[in-house]
Length: 549
Image (tube, rainbow, N blue to C red; front, side, top):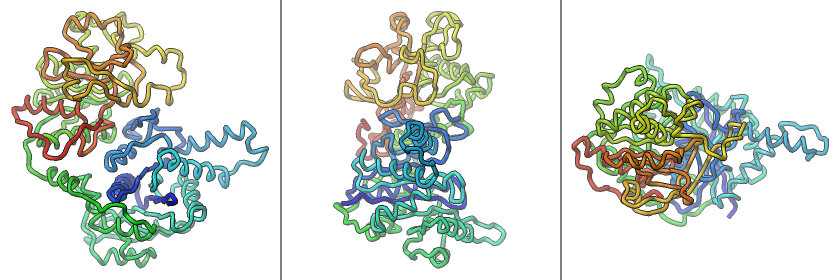
């Protein structure tokens, strides 16, 4: 069959939930037997989010092929359970860089370069690449930002053209909008949605479906009003009240017959009947009252929780698998550095230190690693968290304060963490780290091997610095095991302590491969240790949890 395309736009406000909605729709389609891929079109001029501040953009999600992408791709992968590639995230910066490079080469034969057709043609080319690179039967495309933003106009124009290019039967537009609630009159207002749709239609796009988001219940009359004033079918107005459980959204869309509408509108016939039993069990387990375990997440961007969204979700997946409730304590590493919030560490049963860049708050993260090591509290270090675990251990082993990472002290006489050899002469920061999927061989008699149950895995990386092998022997003599190595044995991928219930760090980012019904094995093993520390008996996984890898 011809590839079908579903385009998602947003109205009224940003962060309205387009990404989660697109991911949930993708899950509906996958449950009906279709192969699905999702693409995010980001209007910012940065080439990718790799060099952007987490305070502005949240987490950078890394794919198998090393693409640094928007965090919405994490939603796509987790909810749909797919593995995406670099074609699935497009930015204005990428589009203009390609068009300008072609112009410099003379590809346009001296013609005047314009937004239409040159920029829009490049956008359409990149949209078409998704099905070619993934083989997907249905491609979902989300446009970042809000209708009316000047930055997104070229993307919306490209989507308008695609209906003519591909045919009405192969394209469908879904507009996700917000219904504000006026407390004084106790009513939801549809006027902003009407204006948003009018703006969209002025561009030449008429939505086929409107997903109306709200924090309060939406009655039938509101949906009828939206249908009448926005010229969509009544059944195509989908009320979507904010769900307390993210993973319940696909079930809510199924209940609203969104899947049936898509089949009818796109002329599709499911190859299998949707089976939501495992997903319903997942939501059911989430709603149950369970014993709580406290874990401290020590980071430098904790003011914006989206900066660690994959870590948070991976912890939730593992907690759910073991029948406990996650009580996540957000601790700013700068506070620990200044001697504040130590009492929070004293009250938790586990500590996790995620990745990050820059010297701010580093000593606070080292303090967290020291506290966890000395007090036998389960500790999980991710990328930078692993490196700082090594620095802290090195200071104890070498009994000197001069142990550090050369990332933070270029003159340190003991750089236990140092710049990778192939990173020495790199000048540009964007897209030049060790990125993407790399193999890791697990060593015998280690926590890592016990967790995975296999002796070779592949994990996603994002780093420039690594463990300095000059210190491998001295560290090993003092009780640090290098339980995961690159196949050539040159790179330390996992380090763990011998005389500790769970003090383990990974150079890679295991959080990127965790799934709701298939939690990452290292997170599960960490959560088991946390439960034991808290005096709670972890139950056997209530769902058919499998190894994520």
